[in-house]
Image (cartoon, rainbow, N blue to C red; front, top):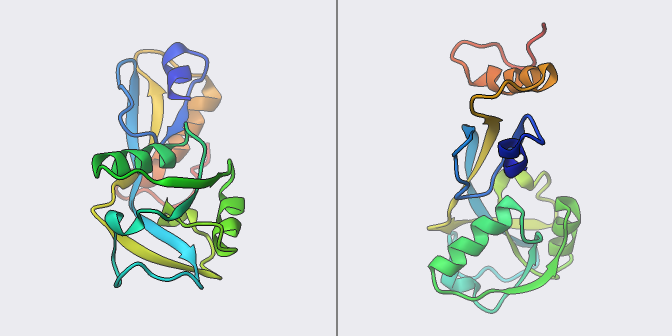
Length: 170
């Protein structure tokens, strides 16, 4: 979607893919958070209260398809550690993926905010895990539509010091 903003097909996008080139777009950081290990409540914890990537060797992963920001982040983390991981199943939807983890089909590494309910799950911090970053992408030097400007303003509003929480009326 960031490429579509750069190319003029979209006026605005929400981005979470690491390493996006910034020429032709402005990226505003909206949120950042650590990645956590997510497993069935019945799964054996690799070791202690904090999980290391090396401890996840050989485990099956419930993963998003390539192209998702979280997938790219996790792929980069494992590649950087020189670890090949086994993808047990790919699902293009967070809730279904978490249901598969609950059922024991595999484990996952996700930003904490993606795990709405921890029922039937256990979460652990991951030592050295990358940070998930969510950004607003807008075009540089091109005026977006009125709707896109209003959306960008709405998203930016809570980031301003002293701004009231929630939507800003016009």
